[in-house]
Image (cartoon, rainbow, N blue to C red; front, side, top):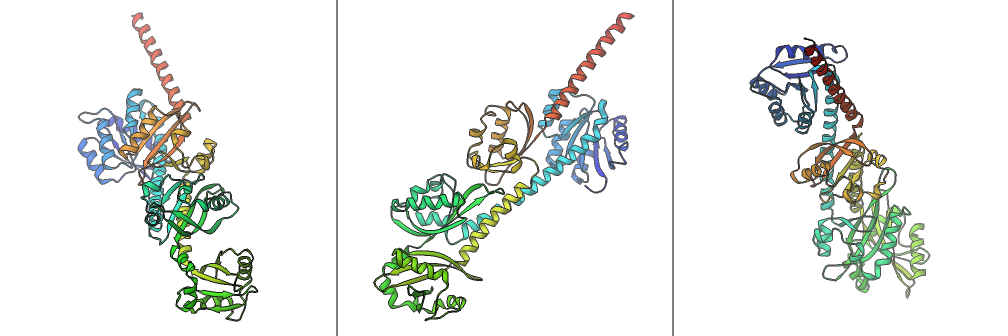
Length: 510
């Protein structure tokens, strides 16, 4: 914060107001401030409307207007401004209630030396809260961009977890397979895969998941809802966290049923190859180009070749493999500005291979955009300095930052996709459990202080509802602060007992 701290002080006692002013002035050199003092409800509400201050200090007991009413008005008009109750006396129960209603802290006038440290801490926490809100807004925008890309690309997209359960599906794949999104979520990928292709599908996903390949492309058959087969060209990529640990896989699914039908009618296609809008070539076992249609010109130019010339070594190797195995091959081939998917169909009776190429540049860009949006979201969340995690509407972890991982000694793969109550059953039935459930239902921001029985440590939780129906939660260790407050409470009780005894002795003396 630049410039002096702007303080709004509500108190109907001018002597107490002077006490507050002196406490702030005593720290003027290290903590410059500008104090606005108001005495009445009307003056206070008018000041709230102006919003020209950084923090609010309020007495609790005042004539015709109390601290609870002042706090309620502040939460309504300027909920992002920290509020500290400064009062002559306040029992522990009342203090807890005040904090639960939204006060940032409270300071007793008899311990006015705590005021400036309390103000510093409140302003620091408010700044952190603003950072979290800005991160949440940026996250929401990133999610909206990702969702727009996810839904607008012209191919189907599925996200699966380590057990190959479907986590997300876009509209295109729902339309292609004939399922609703709700039906697909939670299904196993094997249920959608034709039995004859399940082994290959499992192997491809395992290779990507276990890091043997970053991306793999292949063809497989899916079972549609009406039990019809659908041929698809599938590209599978892994999403990993900053440490390289697997999080989930993303698969893009392009319906190639029509292409397969055309391949079965290859004789017809061969008679009219120049009408095909995609490149079609015929290559000998040694790599000589025997034929190329007009759509092949960009490939021939990039290869610096022609009909009667040679194909590049990578293409020649794929031709030989296709002829030797008598099994169609498929590769992804990148040029300077374009990317092609090339299918190799061996014709053993004529001893050549037909090449069918498709320009998939836009598809690759869409995949890269989706991965970039995912990384941007992860980078935003990892920038939060406190332990942070996000839950979906079913209480499953969707994100756990590095701070939280270190605190819990758990890996993301052991948490993301699992229920918080399965991993941490301890809070069930407690106040933190109930507060989290209320925030999930009423979509209200909550600040919770709870004691972890297993760690014997007090934690402060800040709970923020998210746009997808879930919750974002940050938390911090406040055990030292709570123990200090307990010690001060015991000290205060001891002092009161001692004062009572001295008073009793004085009365007996007379």
